[in-house]
Amino acid sequence: MPTLPTSNLSRADLADLNAFLIVANQKSFSKAAIELGITTSALSHSIRNLEARLGVKLLNRTTRTVSTTDAGKTLVRRLTVGFEEIGAALAEVDQFRDKPTGRLRINVLSDGARLLMTKYLPKFLEAYPEMSVEVAVDDRIIDIVEAGFDAGFRYGGTIPEDLIALRVSDRLRWVAVASPKYLNHSPKIDVPEDLKQHNCIQLRTGFGVIYQWDFQKNGQRCAIDVPGQLCVNETAIGIDMALAGRGIMYCLEDRIRPYLDSGTLQIVLPDWAPVEEPFYLYYPGSRQIPPGLKELIDILRADSKTWKR
Image 1: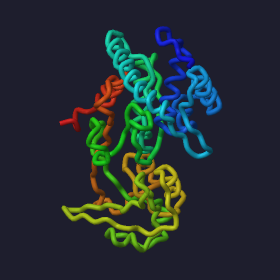
Image 2: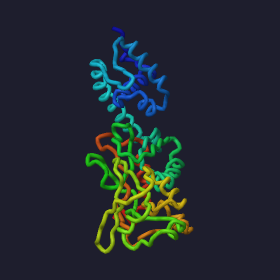
Image 3: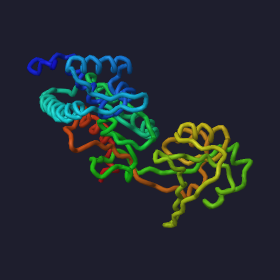
Image 4: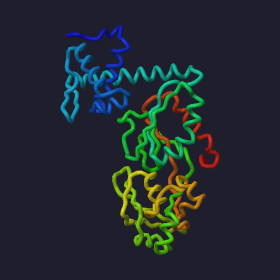
């Protein structure tokens, strides 16, 4: 049976083995191609070449599913250990560099992308020109390890306990807002229950449910199932609809600060605005911390004088 020359693996051999491992873990050629940054056809060609050189079938493919053969399962098990060792070795060597080099893949909520990435990522890229960063903006709750990300950003309380989580922001104030155009032609709002008589812009969360709007005043808390003509799953379009006078939006105060300052949006029920969990950066503690992540954390936490205590 043909085999790869284990004592003298070429760059192409290692690339094809890595590609196979990612396809096997993702159980999808399209997802693996995105992670690798290549086309699906190029990835399929690599896997076919690998199977031809080995002389065995590694993957069972249908139009909808991808699964490993018995030979493929054996190779996945051995490659996983091998590539983890290679990664750890490279990380140890990287400690001797003056500056990190490599690629970071980060998964982040859309709010976190606007409030954290746009503020801190330019500083990181300027300070570490040999690093490259891929940012995936996604409000769905995903397994960052299974999806191949080095780290993620989420609100506190939504991060699995088996991952390391580091606080990277102040606590976050949530507000209901609307345009003067909407408020001037709508019933008065004095308490959260009044929202049930209004057109609210509903928000579907990363867990797939429509979010209940939380309010708090003098220790009293309530959650309102608001009615509305429109439901969105991303903050930005909801804010745009509120600016257009199409209803009341619930979001982070920091996300709409310029609109509050200009008066194009106004806070509804300001005395009831709750202050909730901050943003956290999280990553798997079972792996060697990837090059650049520590440096990114240091930049993110540079403004932590008030909130890290």
